Image 1 (tube, rainbow, N blue to C red):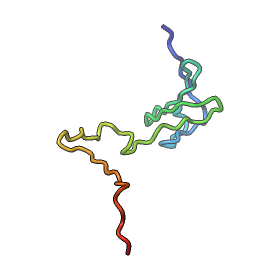
Image 2: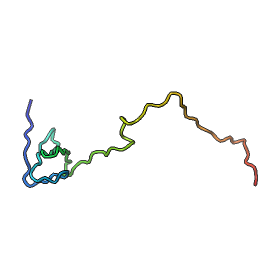
Image 3: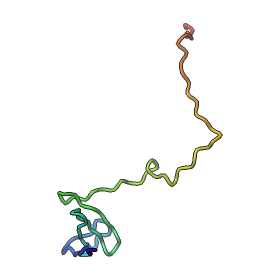
Image 4: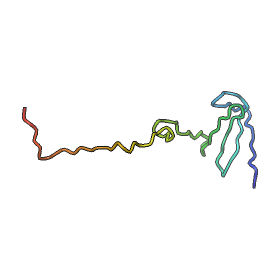
Length: 89
């Protein structure tokens, strides 16, 4: 088992806490990662060296907050009756 060697980046400033010289970088499977030792901020970099954004937490992508469906409630869908004529005004 190989140990990943982390190195500090001189002059780098943490994007989260703005502390200078606290950023470590390392590679796993050719993918560069960085981490702030002051606040714990971590991210992954793409091939161009840009930070890969993580998906923000929203009410749509948070499954822990969803309540289970009520088994007593059923959805009803209405279909228009083509034979039914509208009264003329």
